[in-house]
Each structure stands twice: as structure tokens, then as C-alpha cells.
Amino acid sequence: MSSKAAQSISKSASAAAGSIGAAAGSLGTAAVAAASAVAAAAVAASIVLSPVPDAAARMDGVHADLLRAVQLNQITAEQAEKFEAKLAGRILGEA
Image: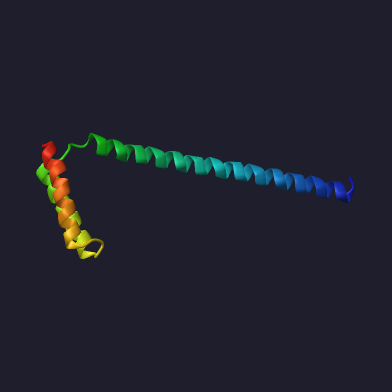
């Protein structure tokens, strides 16, 4: 066998090995993606199936979140008050 033929076969074998390695890497990536999807579905199911807090508890959470937003200078106190009043009408109106 000539030297050029041996080099060609060697290059082909290396390319094939690289393709197999890439395919195995893709399978590993697919397995990780599938595991992530299963975990996300489990979290979503736990949220959907968890009991709904009563209106007062929801308003307490809204108030705490808006207070934190004001402290972080994300919104003004006036904006927080208006938004809380708007949500109170919706949340307490449902109860």
C-alpha cells in the first residue's frame, strides 16, 4: 500500500471517529435536554396542583413584592399604590 493511500485511510478513519464522537456528544446533549424538560414539567405540575392562596394572602404577597420594588427604586411609591389598588379590585373582586 502506498504512503498516500495509508494517509487517506488514516484521515478517513479519523473523520469517522470524529463523527461518532460528535454523535455521542449529541446524544448526551439530548439526554440533558430531556432531563431538563422532565424537571420543568414536574415544577409546572407542582405549581398547577398546589392550592390557590386566599385573596388576603395574595394581596399580602402583592404588597410585599411592590414594597421591595420601591426599595430597589424600580418603581415609585405612587406607582406601587396605584398598582396595588388596581390588583386589589381584581383579586378581592374574585373572592
